[in-house]
Length: 364
Image (tube, rainbow, N blue to C red):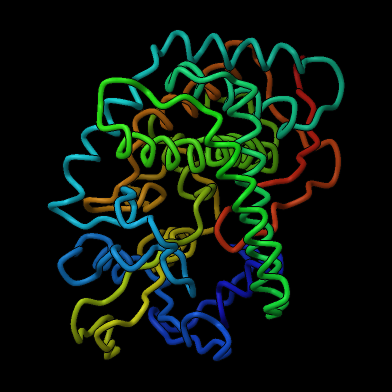
């Protein structure tokens, strides 16, 4: 089963029918690449992510696509050691937000939704992401909101192209990407670094940061709502890790083999595209007992929600603090999420989240 096509058709990690840990997926010759190697189990995924000397990011990290011109200096397309300096600058730009401020923003937004049903995406997750990234990056929240929506539309257009296998839809993707770049260009570049390098870092953080926070917060709330009523505390690092394991907002990233390799018993030729599916690796039954079950005290929990190796998510500590603040807010206000209507999934082979998520608070 082609995981990219499965997710583009609206499938979920829970419903995916697991097969071999690594397998080749042929795609139409009209595609930029004729096919890719899918990695769906934890051990081979970890091997790919932690060995940039074997599996390179330089030829692009999006499956079945050539790297766009002019993106060779973007952080996610660099391998060590070229990757090291811009990554350090990225940490500097994505400065830590005071934990009390994170908690204050989350609590304020939660209080705004205490009466009746609400859409957890539009009324809660999106405002939280805009407020927090505005503080972290020194940007206007309204601009961040516009960038986030443009980024989501770009990914959704790409999923439609993949689902329909129709080159005529490529123009829709190009238009969505053009709109996204124009929106990002309206955001001021931070001072103090190399302008061209910082522009690339800002693009990556704005494009990836907002929508992933939205999807992580909304998906975590849905998991808690579906788990049923409980008065037990849900705070702590273990709970955050388990929610991240099941609500990984990024579905996949690609690498390219630097030489002929063996991976999970399969022979991969030099130049082959290898796609790691994080959400599927996080549900590997060999590593995670009852892999689809939400166990807020799961230990150990070696999930790959943030990837691994030199390209491990730059905003990991920041993202953890956001989810922890959400859980602490639920306990402070003594509220729990309850499903209030049919959720609408975000249809994407790359992002895992919701377009809408009707909720209400129990205890409000």
